[in-house]
Figure (cartoon, each protein chain N blue to C red):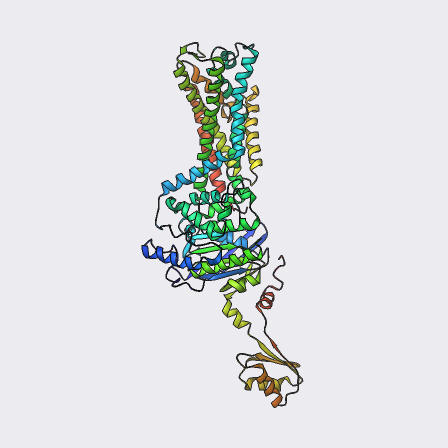
Length: 310
Length: 327
């Protein structure tokens, strides 16, 4: 088993003159819950379609679970559960019948255990009571759950979930996030696309940020949080003097500009910094600790908010 | 989610099926199943990886496809309409009491009053002009475009169902549907005819009389011949269905192609073109009602149908194999 569950190199897709996905180099570590974050229209779904072999890349390539695609599709796709751009089922079949059909289509699934697996999948997403209902009578939340059940029909090594909480009420959203956490705890790698930063913060270990077809950032959440470390900012008429004090305190990344000096706070308590500044007779006009949250970080990467269509 | 014992060494489904792995998966998922109320069993615990049987797998999907085609109410209504035609023919002729238009070849209608057997042939001949082609166009046009339209195509392809396999299963279901409706029209025609007019030895077009049993055998032959011809139209419909995400559009386009073929076939100035038309040879089924059977006269129809099927199935494969699925 490779250490990287999803790897793409230079993956690009052009529709006519429009570049939908531009040289995306994904690396989803095995066992990660990878948040594929970006505003609507940033190329997430097209990338996912390329990963699954639905759309042929204009250039570039990718490997899933260590197998080059699309050659390895027949071998590798049965180990991957996918939810692509919302649920889609036959409206005049019941939820259970729709799952039966998908299971029948899977050559690698054992027909003898089909009924048990379908029942268990429905149970896991809380749809057992509605299993016999026609799909057309399902609410959007139920449809989303059925799509998740389809992704869980057989044990998977990788789940690719495109906006899995779309259309769910808060309770359903919590349940899906808990389910993703539970699956990750079982060792399943999850690639989860979303335009909700909160979702990434709550369930993901890694994140890749898409913006206008490009992957503008990719890191583990821990790395990003470190990058978003709080900084102490001193407004003063003597920035050089303040910077000297900050350095003496052992703060890193000391910077000075006109009227201001700043440094990464690290583990030093802010009150100690203030005391040191005052002790050194630095004329302090203002003191602030800026801790950029992830949202500010991402907005600085993409230049816009997350619920905005890009 | 927090209390899983050893999730790292039990990636579900990633290792060969052993008792240890299976029970490990049960344990971890049972702990983790609090995500949804009532969830107690992992969906995959009963699955044994390494189970492979392409043959059974294909048959399962094919059966599922048949259930989809024959279980759909729209299709059932269509089949009921097809089955109603022979009943209407039989009742109408019974009520009007005898034919007035005698001597018209192939003369199935005029022969009905003498033998109910001919209701089946009259119905097949009548429905061949529009109803059967529409039924075939509806199923074939829906085959790929319908899945694309409802979005289920992307989920089938990621199961994965290979694109060639999907086309093969879809076409096989079309063939079964065509054979079924052809036999259905014949069977209902036979039942209605025998009930209203009675049966008996069958007088063939060449004037020779054969037993009803042999007549039935020849009727089966007619169904088989028409099935082959209509399956060629099914191949055209399958191809059209790969071009669009609108099943209705594919159905209408396929019907129009069949109707255009009928129209061209009726223009005498185009007689050089007629042998190449999709529908030209269909009416040759009457050759099965001569004695001896004019097999030579059936051959062009069979070859033409095979040619159409090969060309359009190849086109469907070429088109669908590399298409971006964005629905």
